[in-house]
Figure 1: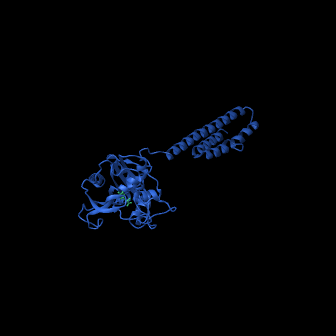
Figure 2: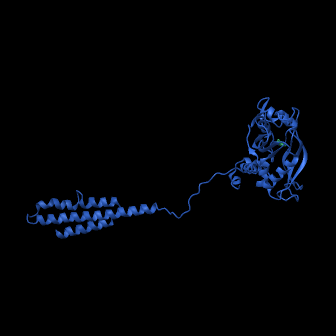
Figure 3: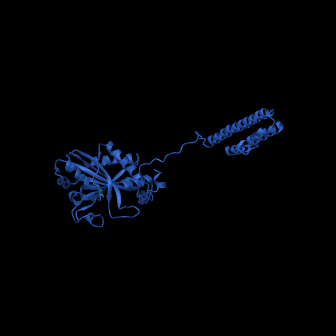
Length: 338
Ligand code: DAH
């Protein structure tokens, strides 16, 4: 009997030791301690033993049960520990790995150009203001001394909303709106979107301009030249020179188109400047007396100058692209380069 019990102990302890999972432990428990186990069977048989053997066998069986239970518990603890270790291993975090960078947004190249332009003019004492993109014919044309037969008023160029309401074709109407509200001295720049019915590699139906206006007593054409020369050097590089060519705008007299030395060939002549060494960047002039009359200023008392430049054109130069559409396609491969 004793040997049998000892053999049972060894079997059970070995089985418990080999159990690899909690389920296997449970199987071993059922097998050795369950209702249909050998142990249970032996216990039931105690009654039929001679009376003097019963206490000894009873004790042996109780010890056996204790040993099996202990073996199972020991193994259970080991399995739990092993599972915990594996879970920790699986969740392990390598804090020395570089973090995942969040992609930050940035300014669009056109906005960058606008910011830079306004910054330069702010340094020269100009205040930045904005005006409406939906304008009246009066502000966009009439008050700017643009008579109704002027080609700029042709349906071909202008998006009309009604007979007298339109999408502004330039930022110049803000000259009128601002002067109507203020008295000189005036020094403003007006960045903003403008619209024209025009679309090819260098024209977009929506584009951006920066308007400038300075009005005071004794303003001369040389002041305009000085301001634009400083601007060109700040914007396009210290060696940049400017050139004024006579031109015509209804709202300035005299008027000029202003070129800068080509930033690609330094004026030697290349494909971008069509071998001329110069690139046109803006229109400008002395404010026409008719414009002053439209806002109630006395042209005998005040003089001034105005200019208007393309922000997109300047951006194309800066980004070295020859197709304006790239600026409006929002292709991240292009945008993230600037
Ligand atoms: N408004 C003109 C245009 O869109 C540009 C311009 C030229 C603005 C001369 C001015 C100026 O203020 O003086 O073509």
